[in-house]
Length: 353
Ligand SMILES: NC(=O)c1ccc[n+]([C@@H]2O[C@H](COP(=O)([O-])OP(=O)(O)OC[C@H]3O[C@@H](n4cnc5c(N)ncnc54)[C@H](OP(=O)(O)O)[C@@H]3O)[C@@H](O)[C@H]2O)c1
Image 1 (cartoon, rainbow, N blue to C red):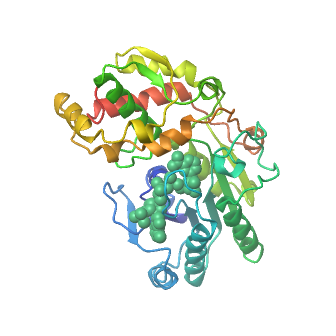
Image 2 (cartoon, rainbow, N blue to C red):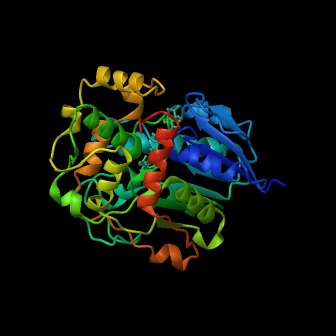
Image 3 (cartoon, helix red, strand yellow):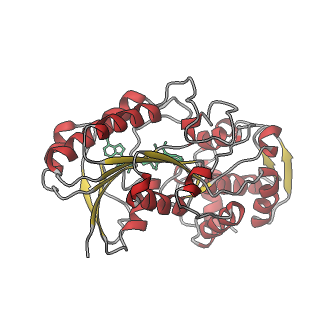
């Protein structure tokens, strides 16, 4: 029997679709999903609404027909360039228009969840105090995560609903339609190196090869969001959400090379945005030679994202003390999951064996 009505904003994105897959099979949830474009791979049980969160009037009119919403999950993200500062103003406007639209019609709103990320701690800027704890002081940088959290905390103070926020680090997931993807981008890089007769060199600096890092499996994040949004004690709190284990690229790297049957190389810093530019034809011939789905290179790899992720020579460690204290004990094995997702890309003929 339906107990909650969810509105997932950004339901076609990486995290929004994972959350939709988590909630929709559960009979307690009725799930609406919001995006500007219709989904390429709609998830069974999700009712999709086409809406532009940039347009306040559009939010109000679309949501006027859905007065029963109890939970809002904000997984949206304003359009941004890779390695560019994401605008606090643009991201706040999307959230504000959405909340305004929901509050105009929904009279049973209980909770609003905000997806944040390691950027809250400045993982993308440079070394940060680690393990990062949720209550650590903020980094002195403009940051849309801060603007959105402050906005929600203030609105919740004047309302009957509570808020929560999740802070995953770099995500790993199987999402064939999303190129901003660590596993498919790395797998594509490996396949191109192999085709060129090169070994699998690590393209970041030596510090990044050796530093300790944490990943977040997207399904674990979805379970964590489900938990913190329905567990009363979590109201008005933020929680780190990673797999809880730690690894070094230097440990995973030879296993990625093994998955492609190629020699493991060395640390050879390079900018993939430059070295992998103009590889479209080569990629097409890899697809043809290995009878792969003929997906364009721009659909499987995002070099700017990979550059930004592999250049971090600092440790990326988030504390899990608060999450555990509040009752969430889920975990995942990052290396094992990474390799399983990579294998799935190979089995689905998106990447070669
Ligand atoms: N991806 C990661 O690796 C990662 C890691 C840690 C944290 N995070 C954080 O998680 C949050 C979500 O990121 P994501 O990567 O999952 O996002 P994403 O894949 O870029 O998806 C964004 C979603 O928002 C929708 N959207 C964008 N503008 C919209 C608008 N004006 N109106 C309605 N819908 C709109 C998009 O659909 P349409 O384009 O069709 O509108 C899409 O469904 C961000 O705060 C991000 O910083 C992400």
